[in-house]
Amino acid sequence: MDHALELARHVGAELVLVHVGVIPETPAGVPESMAATVTAYSQVVKDRLAEDRTALQQLHEHLSGSGVEVSQAVIDGFPDTGLLDAAREVDGDVIVIGTHGRTGFKRFLLGSVAERVVRLSDRPVLVARGTHKPAGGYRKIVVPTDFSDGAREAASVACELAAEDGIVHLLHCWQLPPMSGAFYAPVKAAEDLFRDVRHTLSSSAAANLEKLAGELRASGAKIEYSSVEGAPAHALQEWIDANDPDLVVMGSHGRRGVRRFLLGSVAEVTVRHAACSVLVVHSAKEKKSHA
Image 1: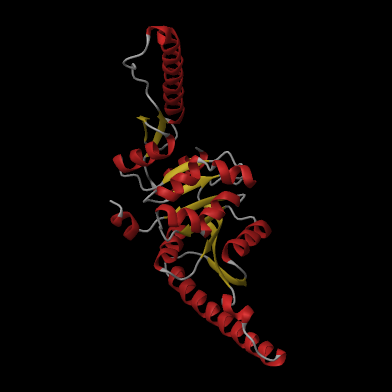
Image 2: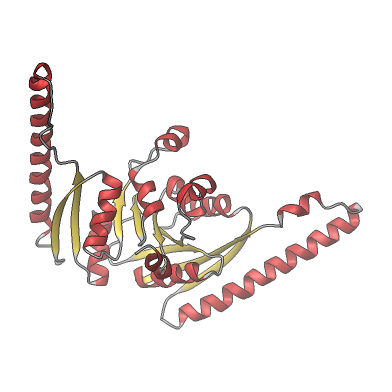
């Protein structure tokens, strides 16, 4: 809520509070022997829904004097799909969601509403966590980039969300091609080859980073950049742990279905493991293709 409120205040947006829950219906064809049990269960669910509606209204009233236009909605459905439906209905620019922060094997098996929303959404999703408060904008944002259109779009969004004294750090992670480990050559020749390849990849990364930084600085943003050798998901996580940013802003390639679930993505790994907030920017092209 803190992140959503400050984000809305920073960009002049409306804040829509959404609660998603299954609204019970009176079941048909219940055997007489089960009638009392079904009635009791339905009453418990109705009471819980009434409590949730009251809590949502109280939160709305609490935020009404915050300087941000606030509205509310109760959606009938499951949390992940219901939240996505609500975002489409109000044409939301970004979904802001918290996470319980479970990690490890249990988290992998159970997943979370946050991860499913990130995977299925056709619009940006901010997974809020960590101790940094975004009052006035974020002060240290890292943008992992592969120089794709989606990564450039994420970098532009990061510049919009940065505080007046904030810094946007562009990070490019690169590694030797997978087949290089199986390359057969005399040791000295192999060392020379790998050294040349590393130099070429590093130099190319530096040139691309400088070009992108120059484009973003034209908007008045304060830009830093660096490149590191390593697998993107692992290298990014190490950078986050070492530098403690307020926010990670990254693009998504938008793969869907079983292939996306099996392959995963750097975005999903980062959402699962980063100690700070993560904003996954689904590109305008992706949103249009899933409209």
